Amino acid sequence: MMFKKFFFFGLMIILAGCSAGSSEKSMDDSAGEERAAEKSDKPIESEDESTAISKGNSIEEEPKPIKANEGRMVIYNAELSISVKDFQIALKSLEEKAAHYNGYIVESNSYKEGEEHTGGAMKIRIPADSFQSFLHDAEGVAAETLERSVSGQDVSEEFVDLESRIRSKRVAEERLIDFMKKAEMTEDLLQISADLSVIQEEIEQIEGRMRYLKNQTSFSTVNIHLFENKVIVPSLENGDLNTWERTKKQLATSTNWMLAILSGAVVMVIGNLPFIIVFIILAGAALFWKRKTKGSGKRE
Image (tube, rainbow, N blue to C red; front, side, top):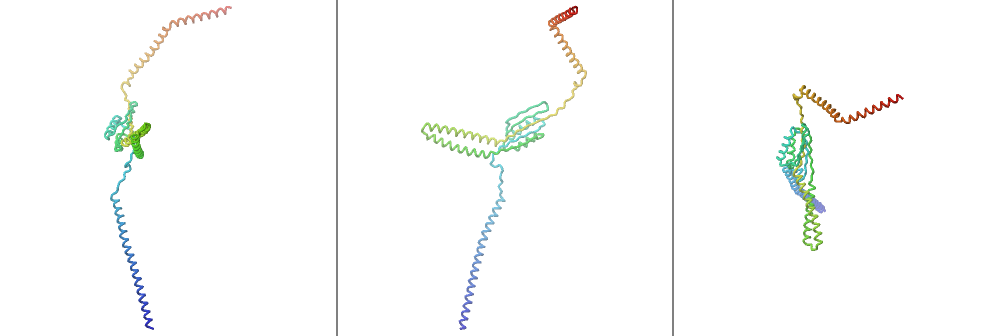
């Protein structure tokens, strides 16, 4: 009886030990799996981090500068008003600077008001790459810059739109030409020819506008207004202070005026003498008649 009790007790201890060993083994296995999973995750994470770091270093080491006006079509215009010491010298200097930058003069004019005011204006086309340099040199000619303004018009979108339109017009033109080759009836030929003329005219207009935009963006326009102001101090001449000569001149002038008046009076009297005689006779007769009439009235 006692043997059975010890047997069952020993069997329970053995079973408990086996269950504990299996549980520890399962825990070790799960822990090993977790460690393996952590190890497997760590290389991937480090690889991502190293990749990110390498990418970050490549971005920092090889920066790519971006130009603001890259691929843009901009029409630049400038208005410049300057005061110069010598108008002719400044005009010649601006002409030389325009030639230096491979520009050309579109218009030039000048004016003069008396001896003190001289001015003019110039319209110059300068290659767009030399626009700012020419403006700087032009201001160097001035004694004083009175006004300076620069404006720009971006026509990039318009030019892209024109390119798209002309491509579609070209396709339509090719189709009409194919239709014309295949057309057999006269009416069809006339209609296709009329449509083709309209398309070709539109293509010419678009091409003309594109050429104009290319020219305006390739060359910038600079309008320059020049002003020269001189202060002239009049000098005193010796002749202006010769009192005796001036007195004789004034006396001669007065005498001439007096003689002219007397001469006019003599000419008037002698020239109108017949009328004067008739007037005197008529006036004398009237006076005589008046006195005679008055005397006869008193006697009565």
